[in-house]
Image (cartoon, rainbow, N blue to C red; front, side):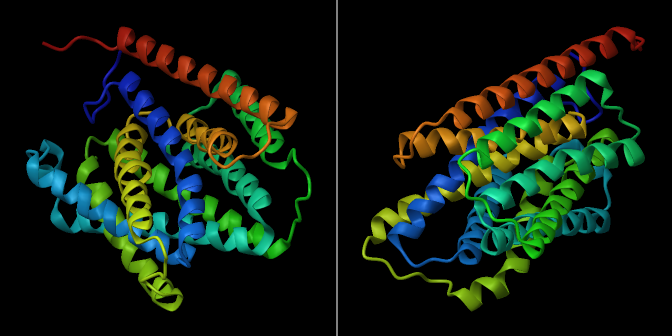
Length: 317
């Protein structure tokens, strides 16, 4: 398996992305339980999520030796990169929550996650010179079809133009975050730990005014349950998932990253069936099958391409 300039094997990067997508899929169910247990709003939840993620990852960073790439990138450039990534993360999360409020969960999810792979594929082609290929195009089309069936299959969706625009803005923030991470990874300057900590810190600052307007401290009759839920959200779908995401996004082609991250709604659908008591429908089965097949096929193609590239590369001694 080939190594990119950041030092992480492509196969391990794919595994990081798969685990991150599955972990992200649990955030929605956990957030639903938080809303049931308290009056916390989405902006406040996102703020505390970013704060918890930044603190946890900073603590882990203090216990680990600094990576070599961090010493080669000037401090000013690292701060600029953390600001750009954090701003993209804040736009991604905040615009998505606003889109949900404006046009509903189904439409917001389809537009945000559906537009993401398209914007990223175009951006990667124009700025990074990465070609998706025929197999990649088929995989993206299959994944987007599966997403549409999975989320819209139950019917009852309402499309509102303002909500669609917000969802597209969210997708743009996600695309910028992914493309920047990939560019720095290709340049061998991706300090994954510093990038993640800095992104959460900047995103938290961006979200703070909205969280203050909503109310930072929620009212609840179940404080212990709420604390456990917030601890889980800050740990698994935030600190762990985003650390793995930034690690994988630095070494895997950007379009492949965006398709693998579509595992998030699959995980959310499974949890909705098992934990929240939602009914199993034909749309859920068909959409999940299409998305898993597309993600699996694209991951295999990425791994094969990495092996072929490693074979073609000359051995330097």
